[in-house]
Amino acid sequence: MTDKKHIGFIGAGKVGFSLGRYLMEHHMDVSGYYSQNPKSAQEAAKFTHTKFFEKLDDVVDKSEVIFLTVPDHAIKSVWEALKQHAIQGKIVCHCSGALTSDLFSNIDVYKAYGYSIHPLFAICDKYHSYKELSKCLFTIEGHKQYIPYFKDLFEKLGNPLQVISKAEKMRYHAAAAMASNLMVALASICENQLQMCGFSAENAHQALKPILLSNMEHIVHLGCVKALTGPLERGDIETVKKHLHVLEDNDALIYKGLSKALLSLAKQKNPERDYSQMEALFK
Ligand SMILES: NC(=O)c1ccc[n+]([C@@H]2O[C@H](COP(=O)([O-])OP(=O)(O)OC[C@H]3O[C@@H](n4cnc5c(N)ncnc54)[C@H](OP(=O)(O)O)[C@@H]3O)[C@@H](O)[C@H]2O)c1
Image (tube, rainbow, N blue to C red; front, side, top):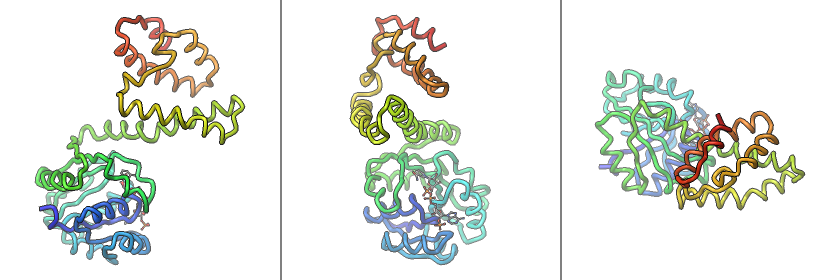
């Protein structure tokens, strides 16, 4: 069933390039690309060995599945334009993690089917990110008609697929943003703190590499509870107090907020320990 449908892209950016190439490498039928800037669509078509579509009509005509891989703020206007074409029976998807298929307003009237399909991955490079997509989970939300089609497609690709409800998408995306973007912020805070201790920017960056990488490995392989170490887990309250004393306003707030979350992990790890004083510190 999956191989018969031609998958076309509107929006030749990082996700359009990567998903298209990934699908092609797995022998799926990618029809080609239409984009705001024809040069981007031409480049994507060349990269994926598919067609360049000059007009929106062409991608609609040549595809049964249409991915709108445009920035979140542009999905609505592209949908408004797409509605003017012969989309009856088409499967229309966007890739936003935060938005739902409700963005495809009145899609039932057009007898088409809407989905949001989100790769839980930071796709940062048009030309190389596709190589990493085999590791990535996708979430899907939308009309029940083609959920089995997508389950079959992702099974063939070898990627886990998680069905998610519309109501939970924003919470899901907040979690994704914390796992991805906010980790970057935390790493940057640590680099800045080391620079305040006299490290050069380069040394600060290099110094953190082993601890960041090994910690990620521990989280991934052992789970959060087993990965946990440090003064809070040991109950060294004086050290934690001194940390809070030396950190500046925003960094101290972040330290406190994350420590509250850590406390519940520490309690799970050491149910026999009394963390009540530590708890009081973070109130
Ligand atoms: N990057 C990620 O890590 C990631 C991960 C998961 C999900 N997503 C989602 O994937 C979607 C695309 O993100 P992205 O990172 O690929 O963005 P991107 O790299 O900025 O690419 C978006 C492309 O859309 C084209 N575009 C913009 N407005 C358009 C319009 N009105 N009509 C046709 N094409 C238009 C632009 O192409 P031109 O060059 O032609 O102007 C641009 O290259 C978003 O919904 C995003 O939330 C991204």
